[in-house]
Length: 145
Image (cartoon, rainbow, N blue to C red; front, top):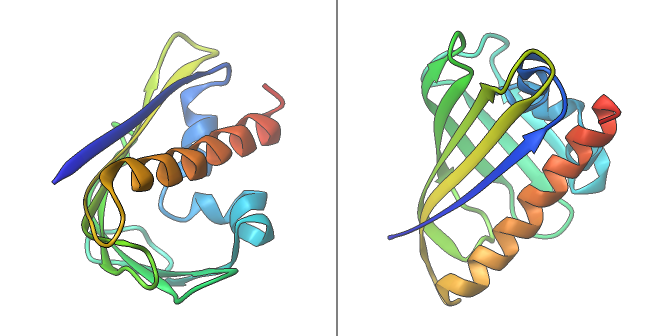
C-alpha cells in the first residue's frame, strides 16, 4: 500500500476551512457541485460513523464512501471507499484534518492510502494530487484567501 499526503497552509480560520472539508461540506464547493463531479448524494443528514455518500463523476462509475471515524472537535475524520467505481485503485482509505495555525490561518492535511490497479503508484499519486490541489484552490477561492 502506498500513502500520499497533501498539506497546505490556508489563510483562513480553521472552522471556516472545516466547513468546506467536513463530511457534508464538500458539496458546497464548485468542484463538487458541478466543476469536478456531477453530484454527491448523502445517505443521512448527520455526520456519524457508518454514514455513506455517493459521488458521481462526470466520467466513469459512481464512487461510494463510508465515514470510518469522526472527531468534530479536533476537525478530523477518516473514510474508506467501499465502491471505487472506475478509479484504478483498491483498498483506499482517506484522512482529513484541519489544524489551527493562529486565529486567522490553518493547515489542511488530506491523505490517502491505496493500492494501485492497472496504473503505477506514481500515476495515481499524480491524479490524486491534481484533484486535491483543485479542492484546496476552490476552498481558497470560496474563502477569499
